[in-house]
Image (cartoon, rainbow, N blue to C red):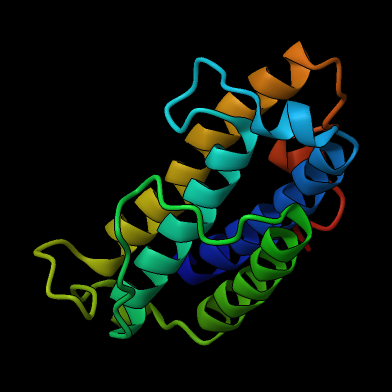
Length: 159
């Protein structure tokens, strides 16, 4: 049952990323990079952080650790490149959760954290929801509609 939940969350995660990147794609470079009262400074900084941490957690889950300079590291300085990398990472997440088993979820992740995998995967998806909340606020301030975000009503997020 938990595997199915994470597969649903992976679809929701990818759908939300597509939706938010489409909304961000309507912004000017000035709006994307404008300094705002956000943890990672700007809309662009927040998008980069979300991608970095997804890759960092996926590395922990799969045993393929990711090297990074800091949680505010800019992975891709160009929005189009960041968007492509986001789509590739979302596909990798979907592929990974697609082969998860209930037994694996009860074990610690590959990086040796002392928690069961189900707890860290829950955090993984919850972390992105936290930052999407910040993005939704910043986009609202820019007058941009980012669409519906409630999981039960998001087309494509569930079977």
